[in-house]
Every structure is written in structure tokens, then in C-alpha cells.
Image 1 (cartoon, rainbow, N blue to C red):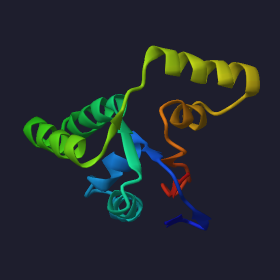
Image 2 (spheres, one colour; image 1 turned 90 degrees about the vertical axis):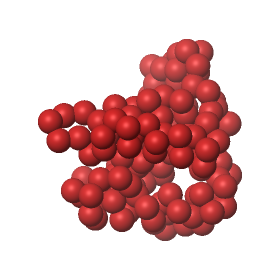
Image 3 (cartoon, helix red, strand yellow; image 1 turned 30 degrees about the vertical axis):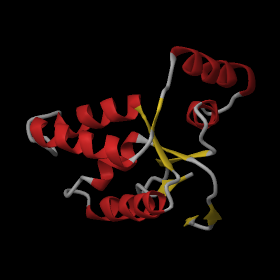
Image 4 (cartoon, rainbow, N blue to C red; image 1 turned 180 degrees about the vertical axis):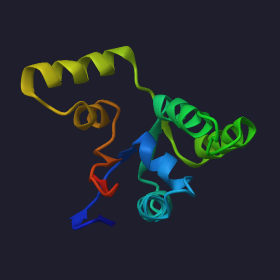
Length: 134
């Protein structure tokens, strides 16, 4: 599978924002970009979520005066996501180790966590245009 110009192999930790964009009808270009990332990962069974990502997804899609999803819809979607994607534990030790990497080696926190939970990479929105990068 390729993301942009980079081949992806191994397990990939999916960032909350990629899931949120996949459900955001108000941002059609970001929605399409996120779906283009998620579909192949799901097909080849390489995508992984964390419990934290699931919680953040619920909060992000149900907040505000005009939420993206009604709480009942978001709950149903959470159940679908949990059935569709393996969920990795992100423990306090993993977060502390990732923070140590940031402090001691200037690693990006997001870059350090995937390997600690058994993933090889992460996809997250990284471009100013909302593009999804790894």
C-alpha cells in the first residue's frame, strides 16, 4: 500500500483526526483523503487504533452546538470501529516513554508511540491542506 509516495508495510497506528475526517461531511476533501488512507489499511488488515483514539473520536464527533454525529450515532460508530480494527493499549508507561523520547532525543511524540504499542508507523493529518501523512 502507498500513502503519498511512500510504501507502507507492517502495522499502522491511526490518528484520531484521520477517523474524524472520514466522518466529516463538512470537509469533503479531507473526508475523501482520510477514506483513501483507511480503506486499504482495513483491506490489508494493517491499521490499528488505540483506546485513546476511540475516546477522542467520540468526543471530537459529538462536541459543539452542531456536532458531526449524535451521541447515539457516535456510540454505534465506536462499536463498528472496535469490531473492525484491532485496538492497542496505550498505557501510562508508553506515554511516559514517548515523552522521554521527546525530551531526550527531540522525537515527535506521535512518532514514538506507534512502536511502543507494536505498530510500525502512524497516519495523521500533517499538511496545512489537511493532507494525511505518515
